[in-house]
Picture 1: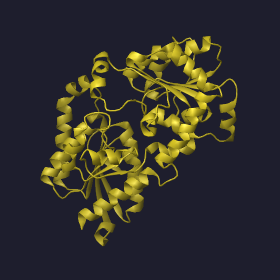
Picture 2: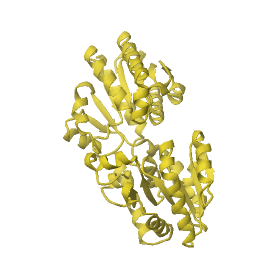
Picture 3: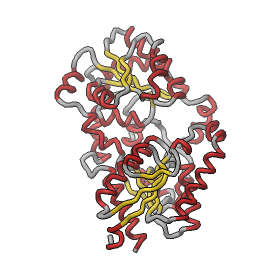
Picture 4: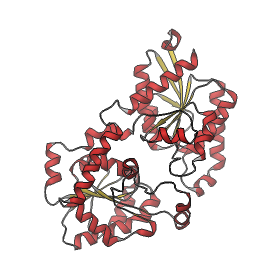
Length: 392
């Protein structure tokens, strides 16, 4: 970086979801540590980004919308926040623009900014899931995004094949949590002890809990009836605690509910197996080397449409990354509580089903590059490089 770049760096960052807030905050701290001079962070973000030094234009929740109904209801507000974001960038162009997650919002911001500031480097942190559906998004974003930072190792090849922007695999943020997920000597002893610790993870969103809560309770009841003893732990978010307690009150097996992040990590270190909703938590469990059974339900209409749109044969992240059907999954029309309970009993016991998942999770370590440079370090390096090249 030249002398002027070392004195001051202006980074505009936009995130619209909690996961993006955490992702961007880690990257921001590494940029500040490695920039070699004063760094100014502007944009839109949540509490983690603000703690890392961001001056947010407005609350991040203003651009967070989940589902068709919420998007329609919040459209005037979202369009206003998009206009304000673009105007702030145009009024005082930064050295680099980093757009994190929230593709429907951030891609439109990128397109509008590129039209007015063609030389401003634009980075997208988190590749769109073009490998799942709407693959045309890859080519559509190429004219207004200079570089994509991918969380999954196969995404650079997919983006290149589909005509997307240059893409670099920086690693999934969960890689940084591995020391907190893997058992130490005490936790390993508990993982092997009786009765085994079983995790129930029915999701973190209200709709997921509504669709999966009763199912999970039924499956766990069948497991108990089969003669399998276990200690049940249900980690959840503080904002969902009341809903989860009400949901679990009707289960035949009463869980120990934990909301503290440290307690959740401790439960992952000690758990023998898990029943989990499809999502990022399945990768978290795989990295913790906890065998699992996964399930998911979507609204009926989406369930009918999905098979015609989706490009992958599985909805489970470890299965997708490994390109193997390692984790048993029960989705939509294929929910089968007795089989799910039987699968759980098989992975709790020492045997071929449990060992097959453990062997696969060991291969996952190599694929993800567990021992490589931390993801936020890689992300920061690319952003700093693009900022420097854009300012020369």
